[in-house]
Length: 247
Image (cartoon, rainbow, N blue to C red):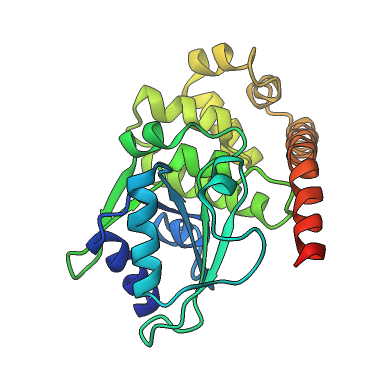
């Protein structure tokens, strides 16, 4: 069951024909990797027409911009997030975070083209980031995002491992973060695993069943990605601090 505030926000976006994709915690709920999320994160197409539609939807939701940067499309284009708080009775208190550019993630038109569309029990359709794009977007410096990545990919693997497509096998070999499953998939798909071991060295340890080496490799992968994200955000955070002081 999708909480009513979330349903209200998404239905309002749909009514105003805003091109947005659900991401973040709420998308993880749809993919079965989380039980709840307190806010809603949206990837949005930038451009004059869609920007006006987004502002109209936010106006209907009585959403105020609650933090820096201010509500300006140029900040979205530069990789910042815009933050809003809803005051509409059907979504009161709900926070909406909007982004357009994310580190390591394709541009929005490509995200939209390969989006996932899921329907709830009432027949409402929701557009989400495709799972591999959601996983990539979750590779941040925040500690809480990494267990979520693991749950997302583990859940997908459990569901599809009996009859997978080549693309699914490649996704799991690229993104699985559970040693048991990495060893299992290496045994089930030895040829693909050998091919991927050149791109992801810890797959070699999965082929050999070396749990300790896999665990160390996963920790190193996470460390490197978190550092890349820290470096990416360093100048943006500095600018945000200047905006906070000015405000």
